[in-house]
Length: 102
Image 1 (cartoon, helix red, strand yellow):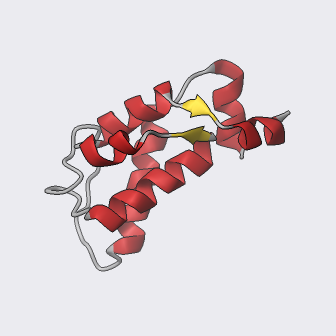
Image 2 (cartoon, rainbow, N blue to C red; image 1 turned 180 degrees about the vertical axis):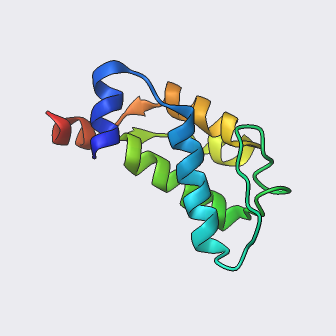
């Protein structure tokens, strides 16, 4: 909830936080993976090995963390963490998250 609070107060989403969330999901889904490096321009599919279910988990985690609703197109069209960061940065704050912050 702290991240949602930060976002709603100053409107800024730190790209490093988004990368960290994506990296955490990849580590959870692929616990034996070695040499993982997640950057803003890593390919979600090729470099990180995220399939459609992995992408859904990433998007849901980002929505919960930042209190936004991302369009379904973000799930389908995002090719990199940068794309997801931009979607989160421009996402709309959901009513329930905003109420919880206030």
